Length: 163
Image 1 (tube, rainbow, N blue to C red):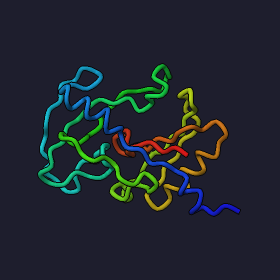
Image 2: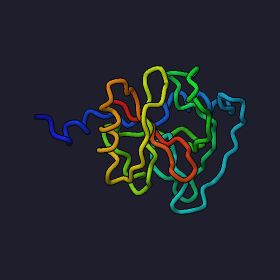
Image 3: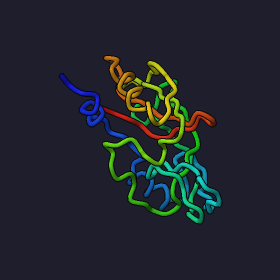
């Protein structure tokens, strides 16, 4: 019998791809034509960073870009584009994709599951203590390919989870 800890260890928590972010930073413009503006985070907790899946520290340079989370299904009706914060300078990215991001554990999240074609299957709200269980339940659907975590308050994309 497989334990829930073993099932959780099969998940991959995915930040935005570092190579894509490097390309955007180098160009100074995101994929939707928005010029990058550098901001300095001045609050704790800071804005959630989608490049390394933690909150920005006071004094860190960040920028806001437009991002399409369903990059694997750009023609899906659900392939919306929205704002996400990233470091203004290259960062090493999220280092342990087998673990739920501790920097977001205190945040309630909307979790949405999608098919490989980009159709939304289901949605639920979870806090950091119940997130892995909720993710596993969403990914248990036979057609589920990916789950997206989104900010409850603003609805902004946070990160993706795949088996």
